[in-house]
Length: 158
Image (cartoon, rainbow, N blue to C red; front, side, top):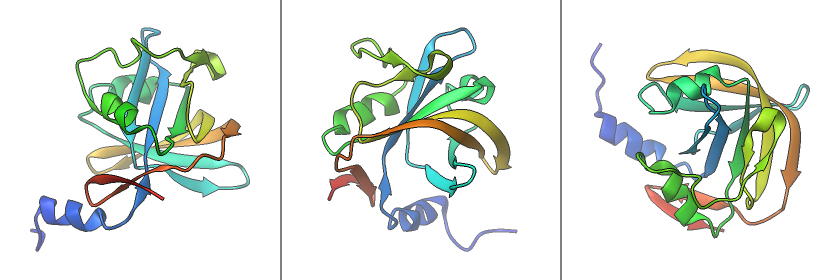
């Protein structure tokens, strides 16, 4: 069945929903740090504490995140647009100039964020050209900073 709209039109309409910006981190299959910018983050359940995010099947770190047993979701603060851009690019060592600490099972934890959720991978679901990953939150830190927002293709803040 053919859609009555283009992928660009659909994406632009989705952009009318303002979202927070996150960086998801994990340890890759070979023990290396992996991370990516994502705005597909959402809460799922309070009991048990569950969150979700989705990753494109074409992402260069797809296999690493699918295999990861733990991951961290960092909700970026309003002053972290440059960091978001860094983790949205490919071909660079995103962690080269960042002093991370180790979270659950060695998951890299960024030094600055509004909030961070350390999770154990719970389930993975097919979602078209993405895989939806749910995580059980085992630990979190809330620094209560204003978040970085994304709206209609641009960064914004409160």
